[in-house]
Length: 113
Image (cartoon, rainbow, N blue to C red; front, side, top):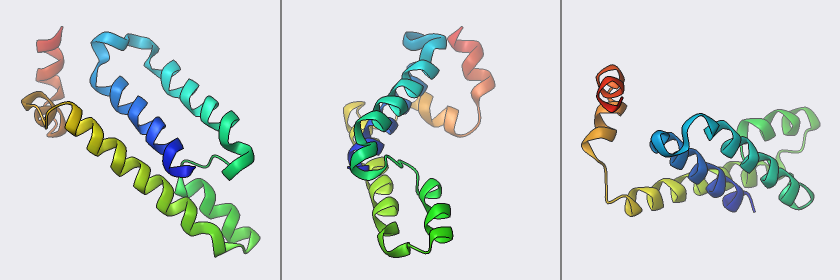
């Protein structure tokens, strides 16, 4: 369940972060809505953590580290799957994405306007 939840969340984040012209200023609503729906859907099943750090603290304090691996492996696997599928669907890495990742956002934002 944690793999699926994290996959959905990262897919929405990657979609809204890379298509800012299509989504605009309501990207936060898409991400927040995904988190809310994931929580409503999966809270009774797995707790809907979607973040290993969120599960680590309560497990340490409660002394129940036996199931922590689920909340570590699930989100990492879901994230890797989401990134891999996004990369495959977009046909690899574009020059624009490489420039933004290298910190040339100032030039990019001026060009995109």
